Amino acid sequence: MSNADLSSDDPTWARLEDQIAWYDKKSGRNQRTFKQLKVVQLASAAVIPVLAGTSVTPWVTGLLGALIVALEGIQQLNQYQQNWVTYRSTCESLRHEKYLYLANAGPYTDPAQAHALLADRIESLVSQEHAQWASATSKAEKSPSKTG
Image (cartoon, rainbow, N blue to C red):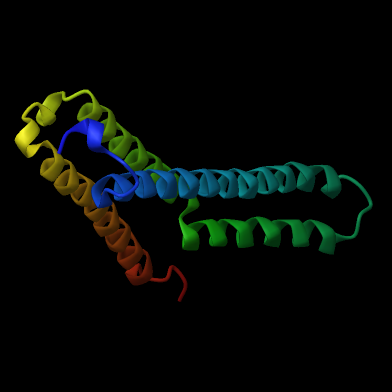
């Protein structure tokens, strides 16, 4: 199959485009969530010393401190920063394969093997990312508690 034959009817090309879109969307969402959590944490941390120097009731500063801890816990549980970086990396690797394939460059110089190789490399990248995600999730679930 030549590059000119590519269309949405081609399952390999559809898979590539779908995975690029998925990883791009998920990367962006994880980046935004991570940064939003961090901004709230930083703002809360910055306000605590200011409030401590005023006549505000102590429970307000305690509540802000608890908010910081809770937001960090959510970040650690959901791994927004790690997912953002990993998803972005996978998205860019898939785009790299796409452009090499379209240019008949790199490993795609042999037209007889290019399409099958593209399918293989797409699945390899997606499988690698999934394996890394599963490993990180498993490690996070197995890490010992620091209390007690």
